[in-house]
Length: 83
Image (tube, rainbow, N blue to C red; front, side):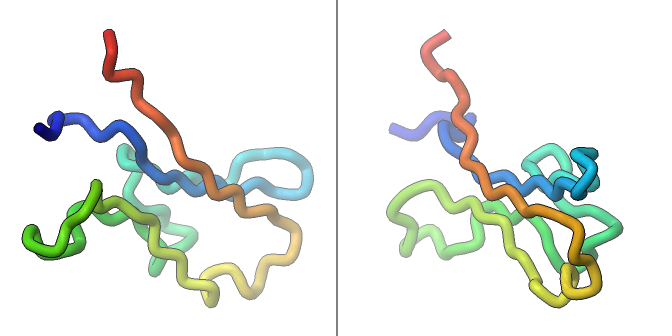
């Protein structure tokens, strides 16, 4: 039985060299105007092909090519479903 809320979900955070957060791509913020072709996707596979939860962040590397003073953090967050 599947729950309505996802247990695990991916996030991407772009941090500048001075430590400021430039952008976050999350389930709540599915895309960022600075990185137009990079976005968060839900349920991208056909229902018959699903094995597990279908969530991903699609990154287009050409969105990041002109910026050399940043770090891209790829994270997987977990919702606490026990409460």
